[in-house]
Amino acid sequence: MKTVVVIALVLTAGWTHAQTNNKMKLNAGIITEKLQESKQFYTETLGFGVRFENEFYLLLHTPDQSAEISFLQPKHQSQQPIFQSAFTGKGVYLTIEVEDVDRVYQQLQKKGVPMEVEIRDEPWGDRHFAIKDPNGIGIDIVTYTNPEE
Image (cartoon, rainbow, N blue to C red; front, side):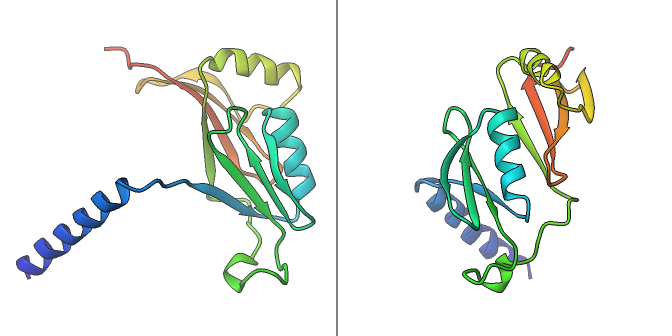
């Protein structure tokens, strides 16, 4: 039994090492009826840009174009069953790291964006606040700092 575990760990470590040598990009996708509401929120509230859009799919990018998020209409005939069920609004969050969380907080307050968590410092070093997108996804906006010792 121990030998099998060791072999599994070696294979896993080898696969992980091989993957780190290849370029890899993550795009989080949300299946939702709220394509236009999502587009408006992410572009107007957070400054995202539109990379691609059609009647059933929306691909957005962060202002610096370093990350993407997509939105897909549920039950669309072009998609396989695994990509047809709509998100139910719970169990997902996004974290957006920014250089100056206080500035972003003030900008969003001026826009009248409701705050789910007011700006605060955490003992582990985060300074952050949270908002919610039209799909019910919590968005933690954070600047990481060193925790106080």
